[in-house]
Image 1 (spheres, rainbow, N blue to C red):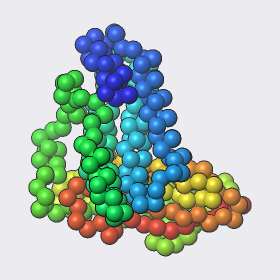
Image 2: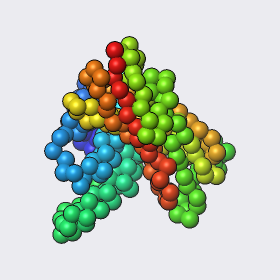
Image 3: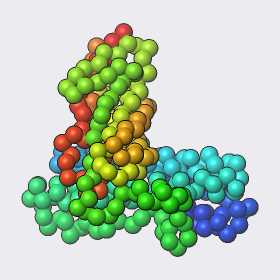
Image 4: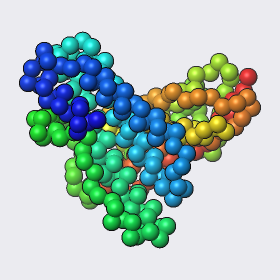
Length: 276
């Protein structure tokens, strides 16, 4: 949808905002949402590819959310669409990076560990969601002070994010702990992430996985920006509760980010019990 219908729609709207095809944007939003939900429901992922599949779900979720927001902006006309487009492009580029830097390597590792090295020939560098350069699109402009605080591309520079804390319906969930929920509780996870490096981090992926008897639910989110030595919190919701007195496993993951060497503190696991 990105490289095909949405790309042409965006290109036309950039040339003439009055020509914005809102129906085409709506179709793209529906398609990205459908693809994301189908990936969430996919129960045929081989066990060795489960870790890789999480990255794809995260990328598809980011694309679905960004395109949905674009569609909402398009309802306000070409000017609103143009104002929302830079933020969507940032999200699309983040999804591209997750696929290229995390999903692809995880797939290569899964093939190697399962003794199917020959199948690695089928892996190729994925296309970006859209051809941003051809459209002349750029991310939101930042002030010079923000640019100076951006994370460097030097692999030797220390980079580290970690989970500082997680709460479910306002109750803290500690490593290996359990939270008992009442029937009236809203199943929302508040995930606080710490930036332990000396540079700001942007677009830090977060994913919460809830395994109930009925299904495995994985919902992604993004921490937009974390200043050096500070924390930022993102809320993750949209989960279906489990059965009465069921205890479901929970896994919360932040990152990893590019060049991060210590990922031992990126994951928190526990359980939630669904009460009356």
